[in-house]
Length: 134
Image 1: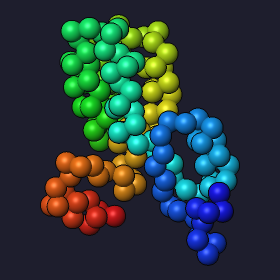
Image 2: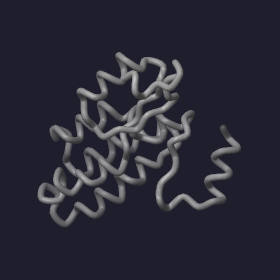
Image 3: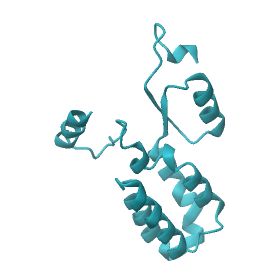
Image 4: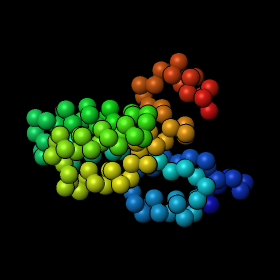
């Protein structure tokens, strides 16, 4: 991981895909770096994981998932996640369990103290407002 550190300074934040081996390496080699999973990588897998299983309910699930992703409060996220899991009958789904167990790496409610809140739809005004917070 030395290539990530420049002149003895390691990155404060790092975004990766959901690779669990990489997650372990980052936590071991860069213990003071905030690690988050890129929502784009998660979003690209949602269809594979849930579209067949949910059928016509998939679009509603995806809308609900993104709403939860953008939650600002951990308590709201927790309560609404449970409702979503029950609504779509996903309580024994391996992918839902994995997403939930790693929520602190991708859900914005758990990343609110870190500057990860940009995507292709972020306006310049939103960007400036977020930068002022930090």
